[in-house]
Length: 414
Image (tube, rainbow, N blue to C red; front, side, top):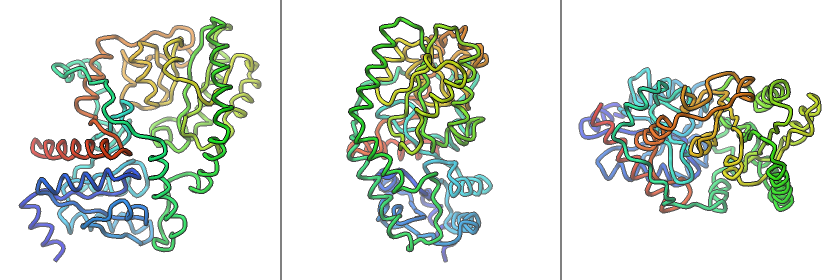
């Protein structure tokens, strides 16, 4: 009966399967927009948080063992005539298995993420980001594909607030903690337990005034000194862009490489400013770790760690920026500052990111080619982003409508 129902609907419209999305109404709104266009939308809930943020027809609960998931999701897609799979974070174990099954069945996979362009853009890519992205890496292809595309609209159209984002996060995670028995076999993709993360964030919030004051003082001293400096913005330890699309197994490994290379190859008067990610959970004392490494290499007075400050202002005054694959690099491109990328990223392209080694970058950094920078932003905005956000009502509605429109348009042309 399920196979027959799926086959019959496939004659009338597409069938989209949603897996885990952001802790926001975005995926539910996407489904509503697609259904208004005559398409069928299904969802597999892996935990109670997924169920809370769906709460519409088409939802199925998976409570089985993780090892049985690949077979289950494959059979589900076959039975229901699924033509498109949507998810957030293609490297999550459940999603990785589902994407592999979908590709084997010639089902399109679409990945939604926070936008490459911030703050009010959402990434919409087929198959995934970074190593999985279809964004061209050849400079000539970027220039050719961007020809005729307009300059991105840099005016912020949709704003979201941290309290709303935090509220959604609590609404998603706390039921998963206390009602875990409803989905007893579910395994989180996160590295830390949600309650441990919340405890870390509370500690950070309580100390925010002090850390921000210290960060501003450090930045002012560095800027007043006139010494050339490089900025190294840290990513989140849990970031799959770092864990799955770079040569590093952890952020610690990346830090060790950057500090050792800076110590051995940067000019004696150059400084390194390491900025913590604003959403870091505080469970690892990055300042102690980095300062310890700097002392071990004899450059303790040249390495500075801050938790706060204005990244854009720092980039404006920096000699260059080093990153594994953070979208902070895009802020440097916009300001025509040199960037060295250590992992896989859509912007790790000759003519954009520095093509030589990290060791050479400290001595001879040079910025991206202006024409290629402009083409990169036009292409990434025009074909790989939609306007909107995850956490505001207006922004999530705009993003959902744009995603639905893009999905339908892409399906018509394939």
